[in-house]
Amino acid sequence: FGKFFDAWRKRSDARHKADIAGRIARQGWTAIYVGDYSTAPTWAYTIGLQHSLGAPEVIVFDIPQDAANLVFQEVFRQIQAGELVIRDGERWRPDDGVMTWRKVHPSRFVDDPENPWLGLAVDFGLILGGASREFEAYQLVVGDADGHLPWEADYDERLRPLQRALWEPVDCGDDGGATPDAAPPPPPDAPDMGSGGGTAPAGLVFSAYKDTSINMNWN
Image 1 (spheres, helix red, strand yellow):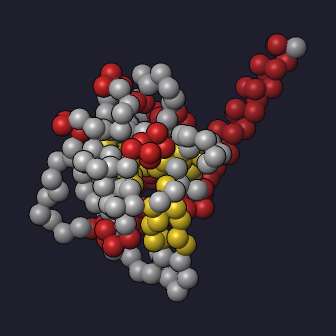
Image 2 (cartoon, one colour):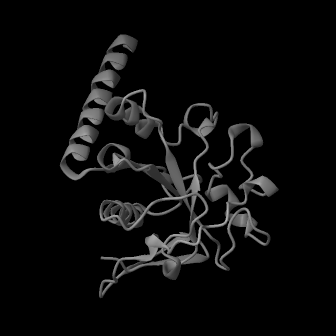
């Protein structure tokens, strides 16, 4: 039975990876969703941004699948249009809520004992981009109801378990960034290229956390 199960699992894994590759070929990216949103952590991440656009992959925590899809679609559109270059510590779409980009520490890709947070994205980065191309990813970090981010004073501690601090190296623990070195660098004086895009007549408002609503009225 064990050999049969192993053979079935390998075939299933091969079909899954072939499906992912097909999606990337058709639309430039796809996404993986992990968890049930009733337990923490739950997260979603892109696969294909690096291959299609030469851009880092993106990961978000505790955002429902439909809303995460909107995030990823808008990120892909903005990067493709030249409206967005993701940089560590920069705010994204400030009129829609407190969301900040943080660069995922490389130790999170292979050494994190809790989870391979971007496991398939790393695999496909090697398959599609080659071993010589450095894999990069950014976490879109969502603030609490009062606009505080995990590395700032007065952040709502009830939310910390829902959003892992992947910008910190593994050996620093995963306490959400409450250390002096966890604060992002100040953004440059260049205009915010991430705040472009229009609003649709009817939008989607999602609650990334129990007390935090972010407006997602995007084309």
